[in-house]
Amino acid sequence: MDVDVDTAVRSAGTKKKEGAIGEYRFTVRKPEWQYLHLRMTFNPPHPPSYTSPSYPPDLLTWKTHLSTALSQFLGIAGTAIPLDFLHLDGPEVWIRLPREDSTRFTAAIGGWSQDVDGDGRDVGFRVLGNTEFLMGIVGGDGSDLFA
Image 1: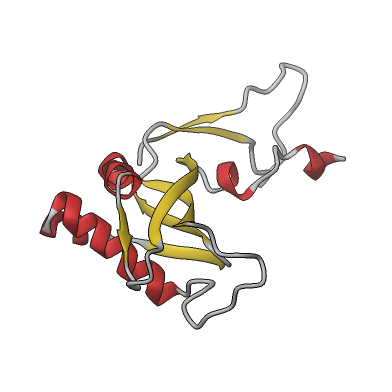
Image 2: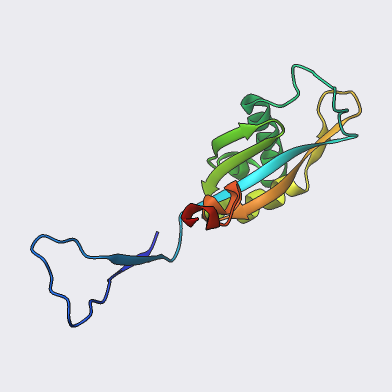
């Protein structure tokens, strides 16, 4: 990750106090992580009252389906992409992966669907958010922080 750090410019009338810490500005040029918000989709969709041991999907189900999609599209190189599961909420998950693998990852999971249970219901993925910064997918624009 490349970071440029500049000290803040002081006005001519202010004196530097002994031991005072200056203000800093920094710019992140090449973040090393990419954050994605994914939803597992089912075709035909489950009815709202549907319950099953496999629905909503747990982390093991997510890892299995993602590994299958990556393996089918990219082979063994796809299964070697490191994934960090940050949050699971029903059929949605937030993950972190290396930025240089994000394009290949998105292409692999975007075109994958498969009947996994043998019940005629296809499982696939939908990318709901994709950004280099976590705050970009967890919601909000930050305006409520300073209200």
